[in-house]
Amino acid sequence: MIRFAGTFLLSVIAALLAQACASTPPKPAPDIPELTSVLETARLEDGAVGFAMALIDDGELVYAHGFGNVELGAGDQITPNHIFHWASVSKPLVATAIMQLSERGKLNLDGKLADILSDYHITDPRQRDITIRQILLHTSGLPDVENYNWDKPEYDSEALTRWALTDSPRELLFDPGTERKYSNVGYEVLGAVIERISGMSFEDYMSANIFEPLGMDGATFLYPDTDIDLRTVGHAGDKGEKHKIEHYPYNRRHAPSSTLNTSVTSLAKYAQALLSGGSLNDAHILDTKTLNDMWAPRWVMDEEKAESGAMGWVVENRPGRTRMIRHFGWDDGFRSALLLFPDTNQALLFVTNDEDADLRAYIFPALDALKARAD
Image 1 (cartoon, one colour):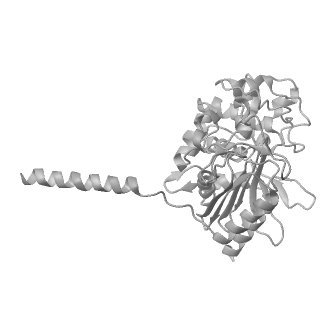
Image 2 (image 1 turned 180 degrees about the horizontal axis):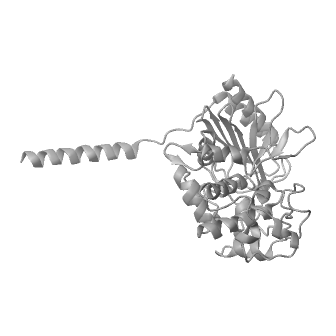
Image 3 (image 1 turned 60 degrees about the vertical axis):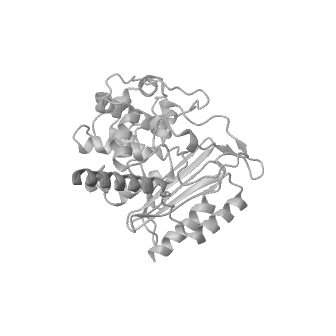
């Protein structure tokens, strides 16, 4: 009888705890009221439809806020958990995946693309000299995408392979390794490399090796997998003349270069992992040595020698300023920015569903806020 009473009491306590947990409201996103006020004023002056911002300081998420509307005229307010198209901010994550495969001994960065993808359709004999490292650095000579066909998306599992191996433009612009020219095609080819080496679809590999270990809820390269209730709609146009983009920028054949879909709070976990040397909590995605190799400046991009190309990133190292590791994104209806400051353990994440929004109006005040915290 005593045993029954004890069991009953434990079950009651468990039920009460479960009810308390279920009724506990979610933890509010961290806020900096002064910054929120400045950013909302800037949005009204700029006329941007909406955006989300997140800041990391000392490795911790210290700010996450949404502004404006999910869709023009719909009235739904953007939150830090809403999902956006991040465009070319996809590329740093692809570079991370390639570095993982290299770190695990499955891929040689200086190995030849043609040796890995034996069925890669060669149209220029110089293509046989292209290395994985050159593609990461945009020095392979591969051209850029001419038409993403966002309005005619392909969803089938062979879309990326078909595009990367056969259908993509491939006449080289220069001898591999001699110049630098930004190439979305190159990163789509890297997606095919990830598939070939891992034996998984590109999207599944990214989920299993980056998103899931880091707890990046809702992050995906496969748009149909996004939460319908958290999606945002892209817009364009001058202030007072904004209009919706009729198509969402998604096409599976361009997934590695462009189709990262996530929220600022989710992507912040990726930024936190990189700032902490490749790990977050118990999740490890890269060794610190590998991370530093990925970020090493390897190709000077401007006359002042302040901007250099790294593998999947751009490094800015200007006199009197904190070193910045960054990537921007810009596509139909959306713009984005991922800025890391490893020396101060800080980061800024910004994304908008308005391709004509003035990024400077939002990023500069946020950078000032980070600098004030560092000081």
